[in-house]
Image (cartoon, rainbow, N blue to C red; front, side, top):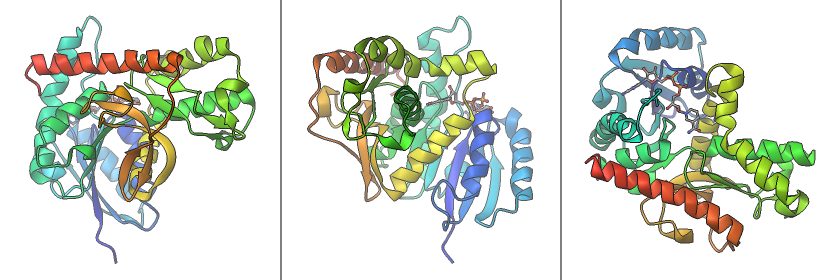
Length: 324
Ligand code: NAI
C-alpha cells in the first residue's frame, strides 16, 4: 500500500477547518487512491475543540485516513508534512491599523515558515488561506530559505470560482462552459477578475457582456463577495473557501488547465519579482506555470497595476516592520 501523505492544517478548529478536514480525509485533496495523515495545528486555547473535530473524523471511519494528530507545536505539526494549508490567521478587528494586522500575522507566519523550513518533507507544498493571504505567504516563504520559493502560494481560487459562477449566471450557461478565467493581483478588494481573456463558447467573454456590467457589476461583485457573504450569513465564507483550497491543491498535485493561483512572480506581466501575486496559471508536473504571451489592454493594465501596487506596499510594510 502507498505510504500516507502528511497534510497539516493550521486553524483546524476554525470554521474553514471544519469544512476542510472531512473533505481531505475523504480523498478529495490529493485523489481517491492516496492515503492521508492529518496534523491539526491550533493555538493552545483551541486544541480541545480541534480534538473534538478529530473525534468526529475518527467517527467517519474514512478508508483513506491513516492517522490524526492534534498539537499546538508547529515543529511537530509540520514534521514530515507534504502539504501545509495555512488557514489560521489573525483577523482584522475594528479599529486595527494595517501595521498592527501585519505585525500580528508576522508573529504567526514567520515562525510557521521556519517550522516548515526545519521539519517539512522535501516535497512540501504550502497554500496560505489566512488573510492577508498573499503577504502572509510571503512572510512564511522568507522564513523558509531551504524550501524552493515556488512552494509557497496563496489562495485566489475562491475569487476565481466566484468569477466563473457570476459570469455563467449572467450568460446563462453552465460554469463548465467558462474557460480561461483569471484573477490577477492580491486577494483583496483590489483584485482584478479578467474577462478579456476568459472565453465562453470559444468567444471572448468581455465581448458577450456590456462594458458597464463588466465594470460596475461583475468586478465589484467578485471583489466584494466575501463581504456580501458575511452580510448574508453572519459569518465569513467557510465551505466555499475550503472548496477552493481543495481545488488549488488538487490541481497543483494532479495538473490542471488554465486557472488562477497566487504564486511568486518571476517578473511576468510587469509584476515585480518575488511578490506572491495571482496569475493565469496551469499546473504541469506538479508545478504552477504562468501562462505567457497574453496581451494586456489598457483597462486591464490599470487594474492589475493597482492591485500589484497594493502588494508592493504590503511587502514594503512588512520589510519596514522587520517581519521579512
Ligand atoms: P476562524 O476564526 O473560524 O478560525 C481561525 C482559526 O485559526 C481559529 O480556530 C484560531 O484559533 C486559529 N489560529 C489562530 N492563530 C493560529 C496559529 N498561530 N496557529 C494555529 N491556529 C491558529 O476563521 P475562518 O473563518 O476559518 O478563516 C480563517 C482565515 O481564512 C481568515 O484569515 C480568513 O480571513 C481567511 N479567508 C481567506 C479566504 C481566501 O479566499 N483566501 C476566504 C475566506 C477566509
